[in-house]
Image 1 (cartoon, rainbow, N blue to C red):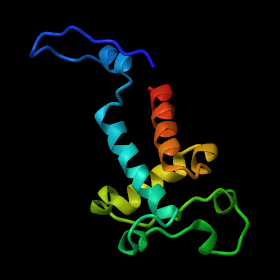
Image 2: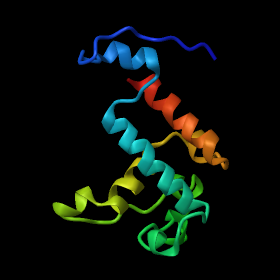
Image 3: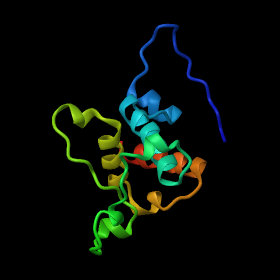
Length: 123
């Protein structure tokens, strides 16, 4: 891996170009990456039980064969205005929006890298 140093003044602004050169995600995408890593741990039984209470797999909701039930998606809870900021709602929503090949990954470090590459390619 090639590393390089940007020469910046002590209080200079870091622009989007600098972020791309350093492979840094924007703050919102980094927040989404951390949330998705927690959901990954919930999905694979690596998280405490109290975290997984609000994450219901789509295939356990009903017996119909749908695209979401076969791809390992979660049932998104129905919430009102303040619930839109909840971890369970955002986690389910973000997980269901991921490509199926990323959702199928079983190694946490590989999952983190795949999410980062996915978000960097979208930006």
